[in-house]
Image 1 (cartoon, one colour):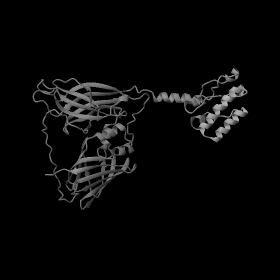
Image 2 (tube, rainbow, N blue to C red):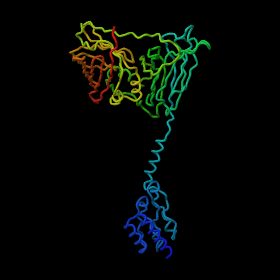
Image 3 (tube, rainbow, N blue to C red):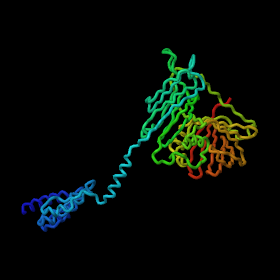
Image 4 (tube, helix red, strand yellow):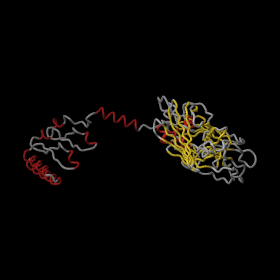
Length: 453
């Protein structure tokens, strides 16, 4: 017994010296001389070992609760006594149990839920296409489609021989829902008649995807080549619903009056209906397919049209090309638009605007991604207008002339919300902004004037 006490005292003194604490040294000396169960104290990890008594006279007392405890996972082992003299005492409490078993069980269940794999599928169906013209130098075309994801080809349909401008494939490709790509690119090619005629690109479209896209049944997207429309592609995009899911997460329950073409784009991307829509959307394409074919399409310069003699918003009259868009994603989030719908809206082709005066009235034509949208603007008086969801608005438009152009302000008031549009003309630059009254967020675009003849 004396040897054990001596050895323990020496170990205690070494620990107290390492801790550089007078209080610790005093504690260890007291423990050695009195035989009580004072814990060792030290800076760092040893601080957690608050109940590690020294082996002293009365082993049954010392060994009643000698857990090895530390911060972290071992903290749960608060009642694991060492096997010492008096086994009946030491073995009274030997479980490795957490303080609150029900909480530990709940944590395990929650962890399992987080780690539960998504076994749903994401499916893309290539139904067919319609081409506006022939890309074949002779004979009928044999078009086929190629699907590209992250620069890699993932699907290629067989050529539809003799279908010419109206191929049909009905070929599907399926991914795991956990692997929904950010976007998929589909390119339509005409198969060369022989080895001496290379395949010719007929147009392409890049479609954004998202886990909340639901069922997009037979949607029509504009095919473009060198930024010019060449036809349309009909596809289905579908993410299987989760079990017991009652509604699509990306549906907009209340029309929001987004303005411009946004209402139509959000409606197009909604999965609230499983039937085919008649709307076609043109998305922006980046890059040009190189196939050696010459571009025979020429752009026509815009023309000024004004029968008022220059009295109605003269700085606005003409055609404008969009060169920049800002704040759109934040605006759509603030108005409750889902992820897939936002991606479609942001990927949509930027519009071209046209203002003209007919019979003394200002006519605004928005050449948008979903087609031409026309509004007759009555300056200085209230007039009725409907958004893309057919929601009625009362509008008041005011033109304020300036030395370098002017500002057209339109305030729209309706049951689904109020917002204000401003079009500021400075020389050959037009800046548009829309302020949503309820959310206070703003989005806008910048346009440059196109040359007139």
